[in-house]
Length: 345
Ligand code: NCD
Ligand code: ZN
Image (cartoon, rainbow, N blue to C red; front, side, top):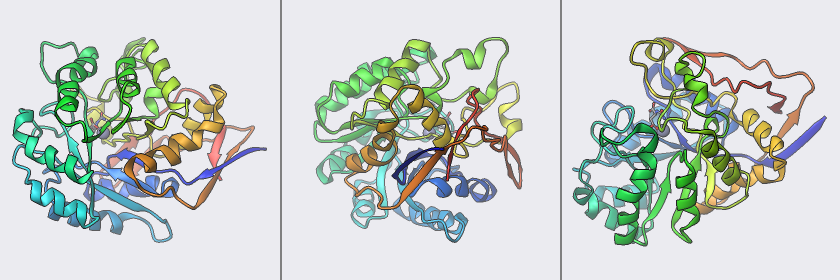
């Protein structure tokens, strides 16, 4: 049997939700990942350090005993966010990053930012103290085609922000386009990007060709094949500016399978199996560890995990669970549409 031993991975972008959903999904991440950046888009959002402290406790209580897992907390940036609170949260070690959602860009982003000028004092403070800003990089202008919203965001928001604050550490979350990859490659410091597992696997045909498939709908929406290939190139290159953020985002099935379904793909269950397949296909298994376990900690100025995991390639594909059951109903697990020969030992 072929095996691959790597440092234990981290997930640099995941949605844990709260309540019953949190209790159902936390162990899928903590089983395979040592740490994860926890997105703050709850209802209501995690805005203050005090909110993050209590959310962190609920997460820790939801992780099974025996799993070694550290949640890395983020604050949801609003136009009312207090720079002093952000700094105190960061200095205490409780808060790792701040998340910028343009208002209306995605699930639970209504309290996000409309006018970037209003959050400049917070961003300036973050630049001073070396704290990372995680960015949902899509404009919300309804006149911009949804497939172009990432490229236009780079031009209208990111480039001007970068010019104003060269020292701000920015992660472009879940880049989905060649434009995003090229932008990150053009920056020699303070800029990185997360890539999801599913955007390395699907293009927009998965959502729209031969029937509408809501379980492949997420934001930013999957793009054309040329973009998927650019993302694969970035992920498997070993370039330290690119690392894994699964953006695993559970929604109950009835909320996805309806006339106006929620955005989000749930992949925590089988992400590492999918990634091993992708990296093997690209002849880049030797770059998997950089993507899942080294580049993220380097950007966040944390040590990589000491623990190791072994991935095993089996002849018989893994019959992974198709649904994650919760007390409120089922969540469909990401189907990569190829057999999964790799598993975590
Ligand atoms: C995320 C969610 O459901 O919270 N959905 C998604 O499609 N990725 C929000 C987000 O990260 O945009
Ligand atoms: Zn997300």
